[in-house]
Amino acid sequence: MARNKTLILEKLAQATDLLNEYNIDCWLTFVRETSMAPDPILDFIYGGDMTWQSAFLLHKSGEHTAIIGHYDAPDVEELGGYSTVIGYHEGIGEHLRETLAKYDPKTIGLNFSEGDVAADGLSFGMYLTLKNHLDGTPFGERFVSAEKAAAALRGRKSPTEIALVQQAVNTTEMIFDKIEAFAKPGMTQKEIAAYVHGIIDDLGHDYSWPKPYNPIVTCGPNSAVGHASPGDVVLEKGHTLHIDLGVRQEEYSSDIQRMWYVLDDGETEAPPEVQRAFLTVAGAIQAGKDNLIPGKKGWEVDEVAREFVVDNGYPEYMHAFGHLVGRVAHDGGIVLGPRWERYKGICDLPVEVGNIFALELHVIVPDRGMMSVEENALVTENGVQFLSTPQTELRYIRP
Image (tube, rainbow, N blue to C red; front, side):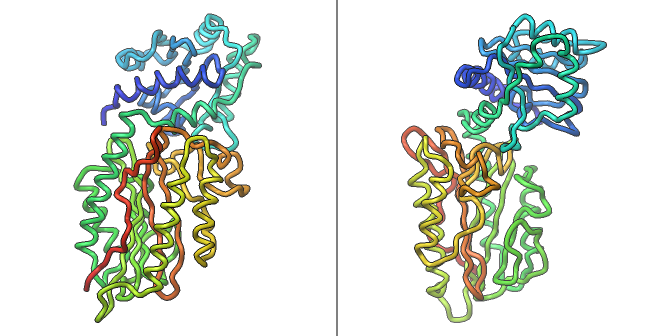
C-alpha cells in the first residue's frame, strides 16, 4: 500500500523534538538492501525500501538531509520531509562527509541498542562501513546510541497512529464476535483458525505476527500454552476457549485476547472455579491499568498486576504484564515486566503519554484450560483509555 505521508511528517517533526530532548545533535539512520535487512526506524522517517547505501540524517534544527542512490531521489523529494535530498551515482562517502562537516554535530545518534530490538537496526557490517567512510574525520568518534530517541519515536504515538491502532482494534473485535457465532464443540483448533484466516484474507488485511500461529487458539487443558500453531485439539464441552488475535491494518496492529467457556449439558453458566479464574485475570488487568501512570517504571506496573494474581491464590505468570503495540504487536521500547534478566533495562523505562500497551496475563484452571485476557490501552494526560472494549464477563459457546 502507499505510504502515509501525513504520518511520516508527524514522526519527522516528533524526531526533531526528541533530538533536542535527548541532547543528540544529529540522528543517522544508515541502511542498504532494506528488503533483506530492514532498520525498524526507516518506516517512521521514510516509509519505503532502499537498495544502495543510504543515509538519513535528522538534525536537531529540523533541517534534515537524505543521501540516497539517484534512482530513489525523486521519491524522497516527493515526501517533502527532507530539506536536502542528495542522489549520488558512484558512492555515498564524499557526500556523507560533506554533510556531516556542514552540520558539525558533537553527538551522532546511531541505531544500536543492547536491550531494545526496535532500536538496534544498524548491523555490525554497516557500522564498520560507516567507520570506513568517516576515516580521517572526527565524526567516527562522536557516535552515541539513539535508543532513547528511537523508543520514544515508536512509543509516543501521534494522532494518526492512535487512529490507525484503533481501526485495527475495531476490526479485531468484529472478528471475535464472528468467532463466537461460529465456534462449536467438536471443532479443532485448526478449523477455528482457518475460519479466522478466511475473514482476514477476505478483508485484505495482514497479521500482527506470522499467520501460522495467528490466531493462537487454546482449547481446554490439552493445548500448548504460548506461541503455538493451532493443532488438532478438539473444543469440548466444559472446557475454556482462548483466542489471541492480532490484525495489521494500514500498517498498524492490534493484539487482543478473549475468553469463552463451552457450556456443558445442563449448564447455564461456568462453574465457580472458572468464574473465579476469569475474575482474577480481569481484576489484575484493571489493577495494572489503574497504575499505568506516566513516569512509573515498567516493573512497577507489572508488580501490581502480578501481586493481584498471587494474592488470589494463583502462581505468578512467567512473562511480562504488558508491551507496546504499534506497527507490530511487540513494538519495542518499554516492557511492563519484572526485573528479570531478560527484561533488563527495558522494564526500567518510564511509562509515557502516547504509549499504547497490550495488557495481558493468564492463569490455568485445572481440567478446564487456560484463562487469559488481553486489552489494548492508550496512556493519555488524563488517564488511561481502553482502545479495546474490556472483557468484564466470561463469554459463552453454546452447543
